Image (cartoon, one colour):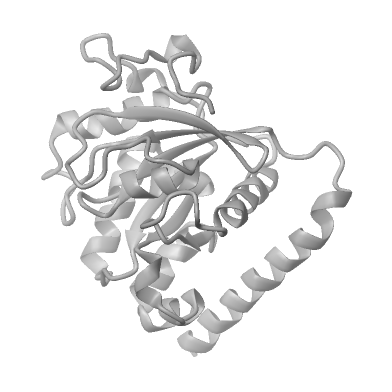
Length: 254
């Protein structure tokens, strides 16, 4: 029964996206031209590579551990995309994630004034999701960003090339109940990227469409508002010393 419910949910998601594609050109007062995205997740899951794939070139240094938040910006598919890359969390415990890393995640959101439209939770397709891992991911999100963060969270599968010809929907069914519960927490918003070739993944525009759909569904809560406690004057906000008050003037706009 659970498998049938999961299949039905995936089918409804596919139909929703098809309906959105038919109606998008007829919409009045369309989505914002700017999208503010925050990359989150465990250590070593490919957040920097995902950021490069979305922006279309190598803005973030991949293959090494991210220590400080870094904000970059580019024009993608007619939209101004601003992305903040963040340090990775511990895989099994919020307490084992150092306090400075937790604070850096919050400061990453503060770099996206007045708040991020979407929290992109990066999850490798090659990683199995246990109950403990799922609970740890949700605990990080809710502890750092509050209970309403689920309205703005999307699962972004990295290492999509590992799927080969296997559809992501089939991978989700094989992933078991814990993966399906994580997607349910995110309103069944998910996407998969091949992060090995920045600028060549045609599904980036589809990802942006999904983000804009999420924004529309959230209505007057289009983004996650910045909280005062996320700000700190004691630490630099990013490795290029870009302050939130600069309003992205320090970013590289293509």
